[in-house]
Image 1: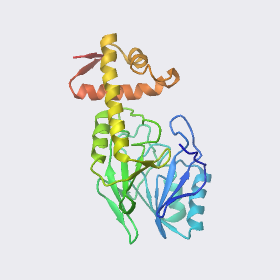
Image 2 (image 1 turned 90 degrees about the horizontal axis):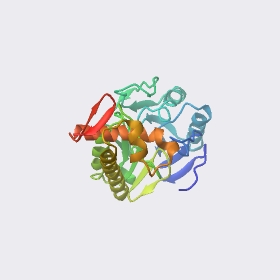
Image 3 (image 1 turned 90 degrees about the vertical axis):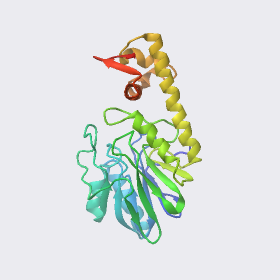
Image 4 (image 1 turned 180 degrees about the horizontal axis):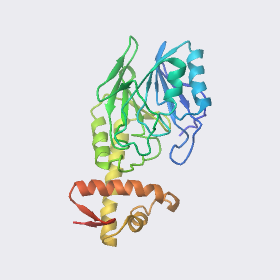
Amino acid sequence: MSKLVHGETVVLTPLIRRITAPNPGIMTGPGTNTYLVGKGEWAVIDPGPAIESHVDAILQAAADAHATIGWILCTHTHMDHSPAANALRDATGAIVAGMPPANPQAQDPAFAPDQAWQEGDFINTEDWTLTAVHTPGHASNHLCFHLEQEQILFTGDHIMEGSTVVIAPPDGDMKDYLASLEKLKSLAITRLAPAHGNLMNHPKDVVEGLIQHRLMREAKVLEGMTKTGPADLDTLTPVVYDDVPPFLHMIARYSLLAHLGKLQKDGIVSENDGTWGKI
């Protein structure tokens, strides 16, 4: 994984530039990537957190390239992805597009898109086409964006480099997440552009690896429940995530709950007053 420098405009391809926001952390890795897509007229994908220096860096990149910002696309409305949209719209007059959240908990309360996008909505210019792909799982309103001309998929938090994403119910859903990964297999893509990390090659291998990892963890959930018998999350987490450092267990609890929710939908486990057991 190469180092991402905050505030630096990096030209990745003839149609793509990247600026990484200065918000590194345990949930954001090196920071949130903002992608600038196009020639002459740009779409900004994931404007990022409402940090003034980051918004300034986006505006300066456009000025340096003699480009205008016509669109601001948000993959979803978690607080490290969409809050800068309003400041960027105020500065440019660009159209903000994205899917409003179905569950407002832990979402950007100020998100007010000019266009509420769904599966298949798109921007088409003389030089490039971006199409929305609805990929619920990490968030119910998560969209990826497919750049047809370069066969690149901007994955937001659906896929990250070097880490699995957290699936946090109630808005996060493991069954939806796995279905969304399967959906990507049919797309004509050669690289992935994640919101956290570097460009990723061999997308089909990456997607299949993530599916197999989640299924492996699901098997560990069932194996753990065999060991513990009916148990709550506090009991199950260190058993199911015994290969994860304990300081990450509080985060792992979210994904464990998502796995249990999927297994409940599959009719394999049940829950009673916070205690989970096999049926």
